[in-house]
Image 1 (cartoon, rainbow over the protein chains, first blue to last red):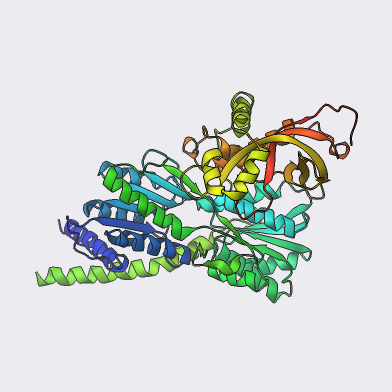
Image 2 (spheres, one colour):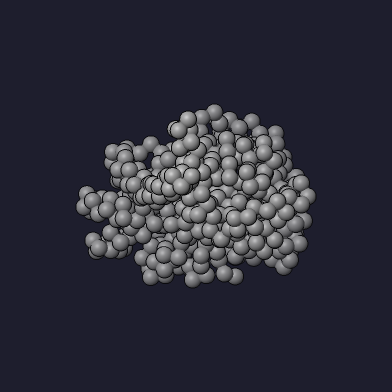
Length: 320
Length: 230
């Protein structure tokens, strides 16, 4: 009996903590009258996800919704708990950048069964008919553009290294696949090392240092994201090899500045801000009319960022 | 009751501490579990979807007839597109949704080959459309490496929703390009074609920023020559 009480208290504490830590900007009174949009993304440590959450929340508030913003840290269990909270808060809709293409299916279904529609942003899940919209950043297409540009810069030949993202992350696989579907068509390009740097800048720096020593003829580096590209570029500069052709992916302000300084050569911008707004607009339409009028899965193209257009890039959006 | 409350806050503190610290601990754990160098197996399995077979099944019966049907004469589409891009796009082009991707077009016409550039593996063929001026008016990619996804993207009967994820959908686009490489262009000997007239059906994605739109040929046939080349 005592154990059960403790467990119950623990559970309540957990929920409270969750509320305190993550319900930033949210009003705790889940009034049944005013409508609530729950926004769940990976950690805001990565500015990409912060931009997503901020853009979605701003758009939702502009449309008259209350918002609660949660962070699942790529943990499907945590994500599931926030879905439970959204259900008990009787949310009108959930905007989600998910924590796993397979692991997320159950959570989205749980919300659907409770009458709450989910709108996915950035990444898709491996099921259709459960979420209302999946507005997917076309990582494959974006990396293709980056890869094609990089191949040109390489003169279609030379030794190169690939830094892959976190292996458990869908996008690490998609991006690597896309790089290779382009690059492997050029027999003059030879991959001399392929390592995971787990999306991390310091890890990319450290791995790059030893790769440089082992491969004196290194001519290019392809990276699964921008933070790894920053790490790789720093290591190359420290080794006096700043002419090596480095490319990344995401479209961060750091890499924008590096491109403008002639270091990193290109990245692919995922229009994170616009995708988040689109999801909220579609959720609003769905809440009001029962339909978005659009197919569930929608691919949004990425934009190649090079020295030509980098100055227009700010916070994952292009100025017109 | 007071006992309960203090227990509650103790647990609150503990949970807070665990939650707060677990973020960093977790990241380090995962960092350390990286597999051996150069031994990353990160690709998707993508079992069960055979893009090549899918394309083979629909190419001749559905894809080519659809694009032929949709193709607009070059001399009608291209000047109009340059002037009133949005109206013309809505009339002749196709894309999914209202934003986020480019419109795709199919074109047809008789052209003369004025330059072939195969320095890059993404080989290009520049053509001049009638009335002939000798200028490079349009450009077609002739491989062996092809770029873009315009064949897939112009087909209104193919939807991302019918595929498990964007990788399957992407493979489909690649396979369409391979089909062009292997079956549309395979028997053309480019060196001998300079100055020749060809009838083309081609597709392209319309990026308003581009001066010239790289087209992907879906059909190319050499025009029977009457009285030799000019």
